[in-house]
Amino acid sequence: MTNPKNDFPSSRLRRKISSDIGKRTYSARSLHGLVVHELGLRIVSGQIAEGEVLPIETQFPAIGNWKGSGLVLLVDDDETVLQLGQEMLSRLGFEVISTTDGSEALEKFTQHGEDLALVLLDLTMPGLSGEEVYAGMQDLDASIPVIMSSGYTEQDVALRLGDRGLRGFLQKPYTLDQLQAQIYALIGA
Image (cartoon, rainbow, N blue to C red; front, side, top):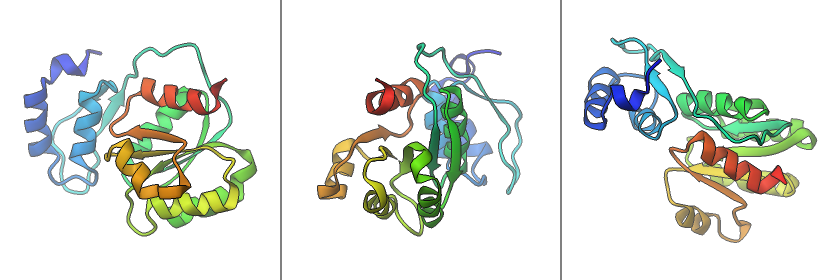
C-alpha cells in the first residue's frame, strides 16, 4: 500500500473528490480533510453512484506506546467520521459505542454512564445539537470527560458552551495522534 499523499496531491485530490463524490452520503469536505491530514485513507475504487458509499482502506500512522482502556461513547452525525473515529478509538485500546443522533447519545450516556471512560461528541448535529447533548450529559454526570469535536476553533466552541466549560477539544479533521494526545491529557496518567 502506498502513501495516499504521494498518490493524490492536494489539488488532484480536491478535483477527484469534487467529481467522484459529489453525490455521496457523507461530507466531501470531511473526507478530503481526513485524507489530506494524513489519516492514511486511500481511495480503493473509482466510480461512486448516488447512494453508494466510497470503499476505503485505512492505514493509521505509528503511534506511541500509550493505550487506553474502557468504554467510549462516540457521537457524530457524519457516518465517515463515525467510522474512522470507531477505528481510531479501537486502535487506541477502547471499546466503542456510537450514534449519529443526539437524543440517542443521551440515552446511551444514561444507560452506560458508570462504565464510560469518556465521550467524544460532535458540536454541530441535526436535532439535538452537541451543545444540548453536552449540557444534558453534564447535568447527568459531570465527572465523565467529554471531548468536543468541531470544525470551529476551540475558542469559538468555548464561547458557545459558556459557563459549562470545555474539558477537551479536537478540531476537525483530527489525526490519530491528536486524538491520542487529547485522551491521554484527560484520562491517561
